[in-house]
Length: 179
Image (cartoon, rainbow, N blue to C red; front, top):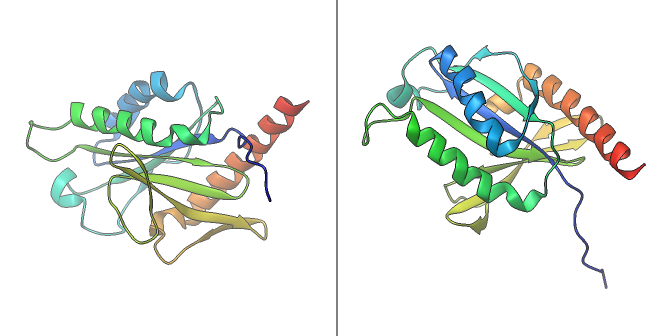
């Protein structure tokens, strides 16, 4: 029989998607008080995985990932997703209009990248407050690997490079905490 114990803290990150480059920078300032100081950001890349978000946010979408210095408990994922929902709502064109930005919070640990969602699906586990989580990527054999449901932009070489560097930083932070 196993003994329950608290998990190691995790490294939080967000995926940002918007047609407005300046809005990506602005939202970084809004999330820092919630997530903590920013320690890394990916390249800002053109996103053309589908046309789904274009109806809501416009053409010419851009993808950026941002990570945070402070390691936090994994159970904060639902709370942080609810915060990002409020930030998204602040940037709506009008009360009933579509979003100008999509903010997807998640975390990585040594073995996986977990993302939060408001949508249920077969691979998602309910957390609380209408928020679900899924293990989007798994780390093994020296790299990140997707699942059948993994969004394609999480498998881009640029994204995997960013996540590999982030994982190295995370593992160094854990070693420092334990020393």
